[in-house]
Image 1: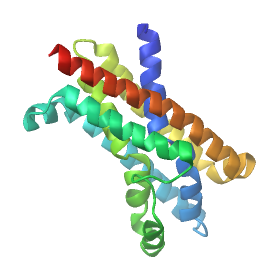
Image 2 (image 1 turned 90 degrees about the vertical axis):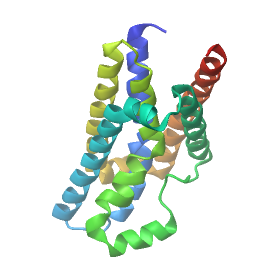
Image 3 (image 1 turned 120 degrees about the vertical axis):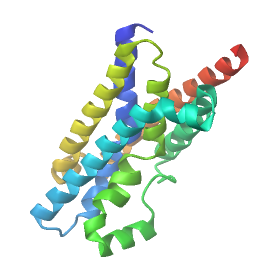
Image 4 (image 1 turned 135 degrees about the horizontal axis):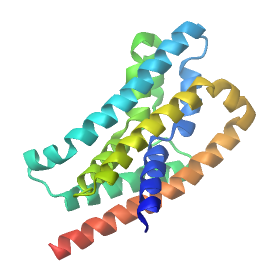
Length: 210
């Protein structure tokens, strides 16, 4: 894989695992009946949580490796399995463990001031899969500063696109329809499945080589 292709893959992968398109129906549902000003506040806070949390874990990722004493290979295998599980749920059209449950929905309606953080910011957008992905990319950057830059660019691009998609979510959802959203989610799920398998392969190979 060329350097340019690798950098592009990092951006696409981070966007795919955050999956703002798949989150769009939940955002529209959770903000149904809200005043436009309230909906805007919820959107801004959720996007800030997404960008801030991924940036934080990208920054401290390698320090966590050192502090807890686990290897990058182990984290790659665990992260790959997690990505594949999320991707499998996306391919099946189901809501996985990092997605909204019925109980979360009822609770969110009662605590409107908090839904921007939970469940929209965490874990609908910045879920374990997204966090582990940016940590793995930052941790495997080695001496290549461009991979580090690409990881933070991916976070920025994903955050910006997420804001745009959710900001105009109701109009987009009406045009795409729920069938269109589910189709796009399955395409992103297929991509994530491949990335998850590759993470596991990389971790296994690194373990044997080590």
